[in-house]
Length: 513
Image 1 (cartoon, one colour):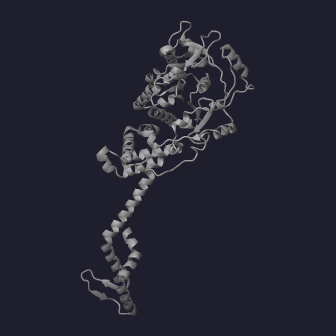
Image 2 (spheres, rainbow, N blue to C red):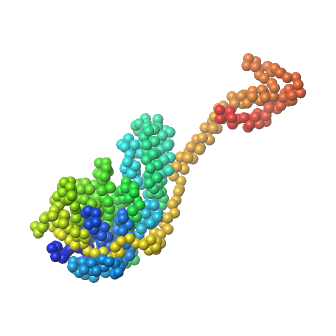
Image 3 (spheres, rainbow, N blue to C red):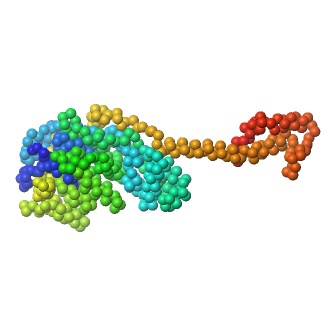
C-alpha cells in the first residue's frame, strides 16, 4: 500500500493488518518488550520499511545483530520455512529476500567510519552529563565555554578543553571575582573525569573532521534511504558515552535542520536502542531538553523511536508524545512488574475483543500488541499482531562482507584521517611561550645592573683582588706574578667585552637564582 509501512497482523485470533502511515511516522514511536521477545527483529523490519520508502535511518547496533541489514536473507537459513509461512499467514504479498544500502559508523573507527564531533558542538550541558559532574563543576565548565568564546579559543578535542581548564585554574582569582568561585578542587575533579573519559575511548569522539549531518541523510541510486548503523557492542561498555552521543546527534538534528511542517514522509528516522540509558540518573534539565527535542523535532521531519524493555523506562512527558507503539511481551514476576504491566496496558486505546493487560503478558516471540496512528493522528485501537518476517539477513554480517560495505560507502575516506588544526591548545601554548620570553627579557633588563655588579665582584675575588664593603679602594692581597696577571685580567673584565664574557658564563646562574 502506497504511503504506508506494513508491520504485521492477520492470522487466527489476530486483528486487521497493521500499517504505519508514513505521513504520521515523524510523530515518534515506541518499541518495548522483555529480552528475547523480538524487539530487535521489529527494529529490523521497521528499518527495512523506511529504507524501501526512501527514508534514511539511523540506528545503533547494540548486540551486533543488525549488520545483517546489508545482506539479503538466505533460503538455507533454519527459519526460512517459518518466515515464508508467516508471510503467507499475514497476507504479505511478494515477500522476498533483499539487502539494503547500509553505512557503518563506529566511534572507535574499528567496525565502521569514524564519527566525531567537537567539544564546542557537544556543549557544556551534554559534556557535564557525559562526565557526571556536580552543579559546581558544571558551572566551571560553563565559565570555560564562555571564556573560549570571548578569547577566540576553538574547542575541538579534549586536549583543547584540558588546556583551557589549566588556564582557568591559573587565572582563578580574577575569574572568581567576575563569574563566582572557581576552586582548584573542582578544576582538579573535572580533569580527573576527563582522564576517565579518555580511558573509556571518549577522546576519539572529539576532533575533526566532524560528522556532517547530510552524510546520514542520503539515499542510494534506486531512491532507497541509507540505513546508518552505529556499532555499539563495544560502546555499550561506556553507557554514558553511548547515551550522550546519541542525544548530541538528536540535538544537532534539531538545531540544524529546517522546518518542514508535516511532510508526506520523514526526512530521517532515528532509533534510540536501550533508551533507559538516556534517562537513568539524568538531571531534570536534561530530561526537559529531551522532551523539548521530542516535541519540536517532528516539525523538522525527524521521527524518533525509543527501543527499551519497559515503557516505564521513558518519562511520562516523553512517553505521551510517542504515537506509534509496538509492545512485545512483558513478564510480571514481581509486584513492581505487575504494576508496570498494568500501567503499560492503560496507555492503549482499548479493544473490546480482548484484555490488553492479558495480551501483553501472553504474546509470544515475534508477536506484539500494536497501536499505530490513524486518520487525523488518532491512536488506533490496540491489536494483537504477528510481526512480519525480515527480508534482510537475520544475524550479524561477516567481517569480510562488512569491510566490502565500508569500502564501497559513499563517505569512504572522508573521516578516516583525523585532522589536528590550530585550536585552543596550540593558541594557549603559544601565548604561554610568548609570555615566558617577555618575562625573561623584562627580568634581564630590570636586574641587569645588580647582576652585573655581582658578576664583577665575583670575577674580582677570583683574580685575587677583593673589594671592601665600606670603600671602593682596591687592596692588593698578593704581590706575586699571579697578582700581576690578575690585574691585567681585571682590567679587561672591566671593559665591555669582559663584562659580556663574564655575563655569558655566569648570567644564567644568577637569573636562575
